[in-house]
Length: 255
Image: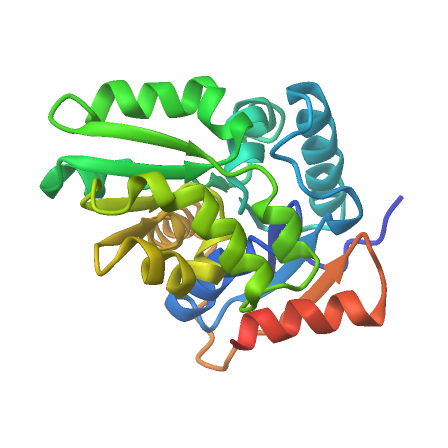
């Protein structure tokens, strides 16, 4: 049986580097907690995989975290959350499993033309359509499929012409026609500055802060909140287990 070496850790899982944007919010809100971040970069991105593939990869990775003893799990990937979180909560009702979702609610509360940048899988799964039905009655929600952007970021292009050229082509038709943008993939906050340079000075929303608040609530509910005052530990791991990949993770986290 796998050694239970993460018993006081919160496991944070993403398809690759994207979830580090969520991890930043988690460590900011809960600095005393121990976090173990694992990116499935060897199989990234998830946005264009079949739903079955996404479910299988997510379940396999979360199973490993649970076997290693994590006290809670954060699925820091919109596509994986939409595809697999209900299945995992049914399997592991005894531990908090928190997901991330497009931040539509705060966007539509005060804006009328909301651009939602996300992968094809996130936009076609039931979770997004439920959110759009619930919160979209007073606003026009404009989906923008951004397949390929996660691949660019996984390759380490964070602030260069490769990113800018992709975004200029993808967003050109929306400039001046939207009054807010929702980043519906956890990779996209890493290039928020680039996105707003094109769309203009409009409000930008992502699910990281809401996820951190929900994690804190669930840790309290399950009586798992760490009461130590010392700063918690942070471990990075990747299925593409190379020094270069882990250095990329740490560079993005510190950016």
